[in-house]
Image (tube, rainbow, N blue to C red; front, side):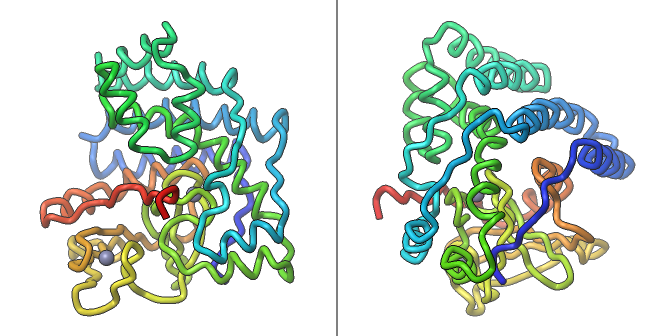
Length: 308
Ligand SMILES: [Zn+2]
Ligand SMILES: [Zn+2]
């Protein structure tokens, strides 16, 4: 059953879970205090946005179920190419606030420059957010370079601001699909390592009860693949290896693929992380990123569906 339905976490539960996880990180790695503090602020902004969106002040996206099923059957993610209006008046203040936290949290002037460019409308918030929703890395990079802004930071800020909205979109598209519907059959037949809702790669896989559940880095969708292979290129031969680099932490593993040079982190969990707590899962496993990169592996760039 590849698509994994998850109930949205309520605010109180989400906060308590986040706090417990941050405390656990700090107990082992006090040096990560600045990173945890920054994440607390960023997830605070994202959580408030998610609550506002959840309260239902925005129209839910509705795409005909059969249309969506046919689209997924060709390997194209649900949101790809769909014109989706974004609530820019709601998201722009969040963008500015995220820039302020990132500035204080270590990004400094690079974040201030983005904030000023948005504030003075030298960069239009609506176009930035739309490019992020479309996962258009080239457009965001070009826009950044033209204005002398840091491309990776601009990508991150936009992604954080849009994430509660794209999470709501995937929930409204998939969570209510009936088990016998054509939509549920096509989500269950999904065989790709990129997200069936937004097209992003997983941030990591959470392994719960022996199921390796991929978790979308953008919209937090949870899905499982039938085969154990590289999620990026499908290679399952001897160049695809799974290892626990830290002998004391066999619950945290790396899947590294020598065929395409990419890696995926996997972590055993008691329960899947609700949105937006996957960012904490990413921080908890950052040693795996360091080890993967030291061995020459990388996270691949976004898949481009426009050129298919
Ligand atoms: Zn997604
Ligand atoms: Zn691969």
